[in-house]
Image (cartoon, rainbow, N blue to C red; front, top):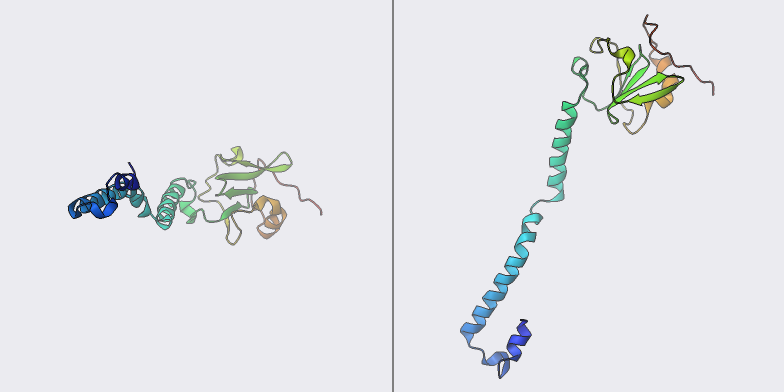
Length: 166
């Protein structure tokens, strides 16, 4: 029943309601409002900033747990792309896998390429590509990296990219 209906049923209106009854009614209205607002008040304490912080910590923990086996040997923290110059292969932490040359093009795989399975990448030469955004694909500029970091290997099983003339 609404407040104005209650007051309308009283002869003489609100002025004829005894003071104790007015106070009791006011308490009941405040209690009802408080009961209605309480479920929403609990959510207000969890500010978006706290959620972002919490998610960031969880994301960082998940990221460190999924680092490749060779990462610790190179003090690699998955904040940049990695180039393995002797294998013409990139590691892309954002995509969570390897980019390597296969059948005339670079392809992505979440698993290590077959030709790297018996290689100890913890002892291999790597180049951490700091400054290159994780949103970019380093394989799109592979001729630059091939010239900048020439291969030094004697393994004929490694597919060698062909340089494209522009």
